Image (cartoon, rainbow, N blue to C red; front, side, top):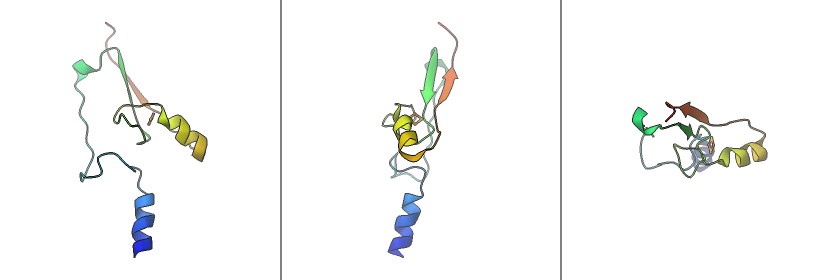
Length: 76
Ligand code: FES
């Protein structure tokens, strides 16, 4: 059973973000988007929910191809 739990944890998409909560939910108000915001979709950013570029390391290490979501706001 310990092996199963370890395997389940390893299979989690989310390895480190807010693991003390049942569900990670973030809200960003449109007025805070500014010109653009870059959101993490690999779940490895230290600035989650924002991208910090860590997806590049993940892709290089695993052969994956994940990248961020870029939300463009109204230009100033
Ligand atoms: Fe996760 Fe960039 S760090 S998408």
